[in-house]
Length: 80
Image (cartoon, rainbow, N blue to C red; front, side, top):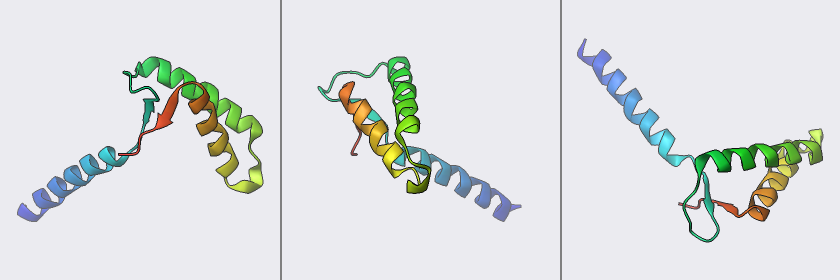
């Protein structure tokens, strides 16, 4: 029973750590991010990326287009 609880506790800790490593977008000017607006912009930019991506490039071009679109809209990827 004790080892079962240890496994569960370890899984919870690892899941918490995994969530912290996910990088989001921040405003280029350092302002606060309106999550709803960010998600709407990200959806638009992913659409641009999907239209401009090449199925043979494993999504690299699509991701680059999405990141460039977000930058045009004032968002950059969080580096920390």
